[in-house]
Image (tube, rainbow, N blue to C red; front, top):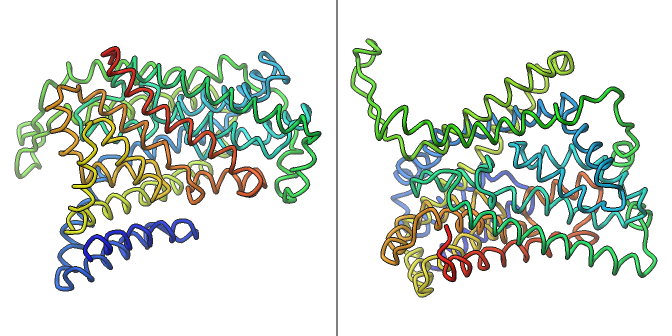
Length: 473
């Protein structure tokens, strides 16, 4: 019975997300409903002592990353930098390689720190025009955007500033650059297999005589208007447009190396430095190095964007940043609610049977990969599923890795990659947004997104195999 209560809570939250209801509202309802069925008297204490404690702790650690990432992405959009990068990619790679162009541009933007959702809106109008001119069926486009934005640059490549690569740092005391060789190998495997899949789908569909117009006939009027929008005149130079993205990558790497040297293993704030303190504040540095490095890198990227594109963004800066802040609040609160939900579920007796079942998978890396990707699939969120899994099982993962003499850097990379595997099931928010922006339906385009999902999931186990065969980290 206790297991069925946990399962019911997970299914309820999954259905709520799929139906478009707010996770911020329904995550606590699902969690406290499970507590009510287990021990009615514990509902209020669990809400205050576990759910809210976990939720607030998540916000404390990660909200600045969500905020700075959202603002940076919005400024890249307002400055015309994203548009200039797309136009340059089309010019130099060629319209005949439409899939490669779309994947490359999405990858550049996401690895440079732009939010996945911002990338979808920024790239779609140009991707649609590129597909139209090449007469490639429009329904294949979401698969290409998913490969570029939702896969290897989200959680696989070392140093990516996306939140899926940052969350494991606080649990495993690693940095965003964990397991660089395995990350690069996994990214190359995902990219190569993904592009091969997209090209196979393009050839097989076009061989049947299907062209762009077949799928675009169902596009909404708003979508058609977006596609028809002309390229702005006087776009910035593509090298200037790339500069903030490069800045984020370089600064992230440099700060990851420099911060431990500046602060040592710990740092204490005392009343000698800040007279208003009533008690000393001590902070262990290693768990926050990855977070501080990404925050500093994104801040430098924002400053460089403002400095180089001030005249372009000054009139829309206020409204644009308001939109970005609103998006950051929503994204952070959604994930924090799921994190609080995971903390509550992990405390229930029914979760012990789930945990024991997962322990039956003897290999530590496979165990972690299966656990994380399963919860990411159930919640429809890479960051949410990973947060739930790590909130409940991170100590178990650490003990198993140490017993098997597996570096926690490897565990970090496997967990991050696994979070972006089965997360893109039909109820995933990014998938729903992508299909809404492109004016397509699950029936038309989800097959290709799911193909990328399968490739990304298999890449996790490929990386695990490479580690065991070579010992590379």
